[in-house]
Image (tube, rainbow, N blue to C red):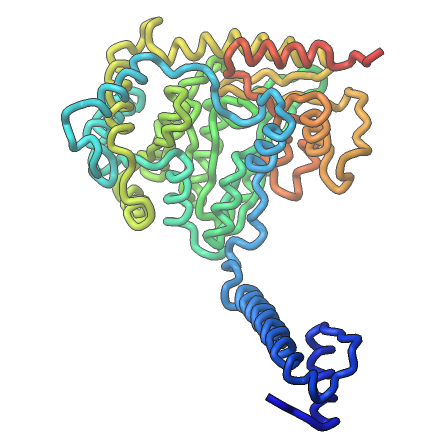
Length: 483
């Protein structure tokens, strides 16, 4: 094909320049027939790239507008567990941060799961009852019927969930309306605040404060009755309590629970009692008291429990909620439209484990007593380890966490982000330079009270002796410098 004329040459040169094609040769009429196909090909590539870029820009605009995250989850992206677990893995740190035991579960519980999944009964591999495997809710109703001294209907007053997390989600999502206020006692497990915000509620924080100076334990952190009372109003929908408390290890005394109960009744407020560490209350004047057992509190309390904590099987992700039928119906509505049902085989194994423990209650063989003895021994060891590094441990009355005061430690944290609280800086520094992972306690406080916890960090001490050996080696050599 022959194309001639000066106008044609100018068009070809303009196309070539737009396509980033620069030819040193002078385009002549005879060269046009060879050059045009090449320029047409390059121009086509340019158009494809331009189209792809426009498509990406269009998709970006769509994602920024129509496909942007719902407002109820904006600002909730950051998660302390994801952040510090990843940091521990990156630096191959000894992990005393995340709250899970690394020691074996009770043998009879392990055996129950093995026998269930290898059973000829094919139904163990299929869906079970949505609100809880029949054998498990029956075992739970027997257990809590004994400790509460009341009959609990396994079919209407109990529900099995995917861990205590889902129990809390069903309660908060089911009851909290936009604008409702929910009182949270600090320190608290971080998901309380996030779930309340997702439901459109307003968290109201009231802290436990030390009632003395010097050496203190978890029992010395108390509520100010007037401050607590000031949190209640006609807008208050619920209060969430956690006993034994994570991360503090406080076991609420009867008088403290009676104060909370009186305010719940005075202001007609729902009480959510997170009791996942209920079998790990090894100290405390009154032992572990369930607030639902107090006068007129069953009717307004939903209690959350956990197989993961009870049998040291956090990976089985099985929990439960119990309470009066009229409150449970709301939880069931959320559950059936979100999760529907939980693992059949896991529920069967947990039920068998509980049945065995029901026959052992009050004996030294009962796992609920075995775990307490293990924790007391490990608590003492953890406390001594922390003291050797110059930290001031706050000994817990329950649970398997211990927080420590780092205010007297001489540590240069200039290498860390100065916009973060001191405890965050310290934990990141320790993970990177000492290869020991822990959790900053300010993560368990609302924004306005984070300063109260900036000198505290949390350790998990329900670990194998070999894990504690590694941590101890780091802590006893903490202040040594390389020569």
